[in-house]
Length: 391
Image (cartoon, rainbow, N blue to C red; front, side, top):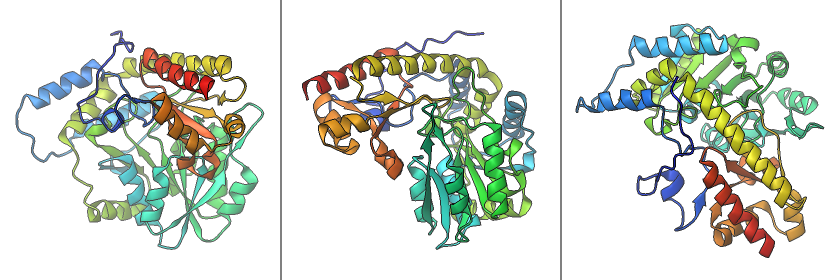
């Protein structure tokens, strides 16, 4: 097994990086869900072999690709996927949009549990639907939980025809349990609500926790799962994802929307990178999760020690995203978390994601990207706390 050095700094400035090159000069980016780590060696080597061919035309998706996806989920997560269930496309967000366009009608409502990934709202809006928010509640354990009474009440609305599940949950960091997933399936089934499960963060799980694919415990005949190696293996720019749908009629309609929206031709480099990731990079993801765990504990410790009781890091079970409750701090300063984020960019030169973009329930929170070197994380926290001491 190869040992990877996640402390190795990689300069991304000047590479047309969304995360780094869109920043004002001198601002440290700890926002968008994009890693600063080099990809695993087998992925780099597979891409180098493909690049050396020097012809980059349209590509078919070969049997080897399907085998890699199927074998990974069977061996790693106990999920048996048949090849004909897989529809490939250029990304998980386009996948969700195609599912919504295929399975909902304009004017209907799509349920989400907020705070939740901000792109869900644009996908819902672009499909002609409106977002129905069921806010998550913070339990005695400090983590988010579904408000089951509110969730079922909203599902019972005849205009709610789909629910987008985020598993693991972004930005709250929950890795939903089998019991929770079965309860979601039961409620949605009773009210004829189709579940679209975004599982792009599926490999990013803290030690001691287990990701469970929704389709293995929920009603797989009334659900669609969107997955990709992109987030977990840091290959998002190579643009490839999979829609897994067991029901043939739903799959036919989804395939039609993929072609109508012309998101059916995938990147040849995404194909070879995904094959390498799933066939050869299990050790890399295991070591990555250990490193993210170290960074999470660093964030938690520093906020506890230096936040003066005005900030708190929510416990997470998955993703590489820290979710910081700044509501007491914002109240003390007489500002919103959007204004806090703006001041941190302007005065502290550090960029976190403002919680409000994840729905009304995210107001008062900041999201921190932990997929960076520990040195980078500490520098960002130094900048934030130095500013707050002077503010």
